[in-house]
Length: 233
Image (cartoon, rainbow, N blue to C red; front, top):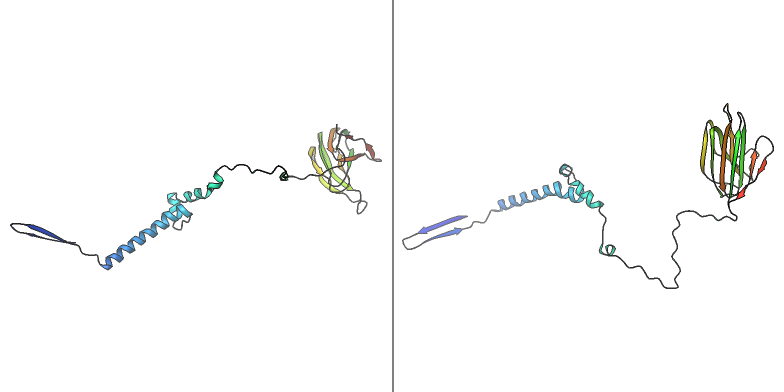
C-alpha cells in the first residue's frame, strides 16, 4: 500500500494506492492456513470427536474422554422420547403369548415328602434311595452332627449290566456333615445316598426330601426295606 499527498496554497489532497499481494505471498498464506487446520484437526478435533489420537495430544489434554462420553450416551429420537398410547386390541383378539423364562414339566401325581432320622455307629453304613421317573425333580437336605463319608448315586431300571450305576456326588476322603440341593433324574430308576460313619463315635443325621418319587427303600446290609413316603399335605 502506497500513499501520495500534494499540497498547495488553496488545497491539498492524498491518494491511496493499494497494491495487490503477489502470488507468492498468497500461496504462502494458504499453505500456513492449511498447516494450521491440519494441526488443529489432528490435535483436537479427531481426539475429541472420534477418539482418534495419533499424536497423543488428545490424551494429554483430556479430549479423548469427550469422545467416549458421547459414545456412551443413548441415542434418543423424537419418536422414542415421546410417550406412546397403548395399542388397542380388538375385543375378540387372542391374548398375547407370554415369554417363557424357564422350563415346565407336568406330572401326573402330586409330589411326596419324606423325613428320616438315622444313627450310625462307628463303621456302620446305610443307603436310602427313591424311585423316580426320568426327568422327575427332587429337592433334598441332610445334616449330621459329625462328618460322614457319602456318595449320591443312582441305578436305572434298565441297566446295561448288573454292576452299572451313575455317581452324582462323592466324598469318601474327608466327608461332610451336610448337603443341600435339587436333583433331576437322568433315568427312570432308584436314586439316593450311601453314608458311612468312619469316626470313633456315633453320628446322628436327618434326611429330608420332597419330589416326584413314588417309593423309597433303605439298604442296611441285608435285604432292602420299603420305607413309607407320603403325599404332601
